Image (tube, rainbow, N blue to C red; front, side, top):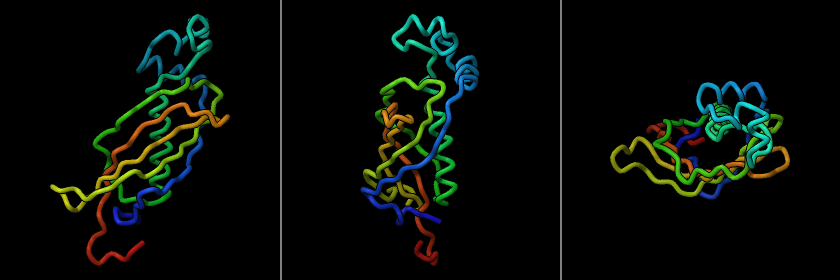
Length: 153
């Protein structure tokens, strides 16, 4: 299990792969972001997107799927997140794209009010199959501190 003490400022990691499908783009948009350029080729062709594009919120959801899979694989003692900062949708995400993530730990500290948990900030960059950055944000993560008597990981 990876605890707060195992997190190193400056550490980078690459992970995930997510294939964006037309059906998923349209299903998500129909339910959560029903703007014409997320639902119709014809409407999208009349915009700066030029073709059907994924909602930015859908991109966030796809990234979250990769983040959770990575946390499980690396057995982090994660406790959720109080939010994100600096969210930017840099380029459109299109059906047929394949997304991946890169992250860098920016800072960390033990919580003043809850010393059994730490808080860390990391910059997430999301890229498509052509290594074009499509989204970036700063994540604020909560993670358990190492319980007394737990061996160092």
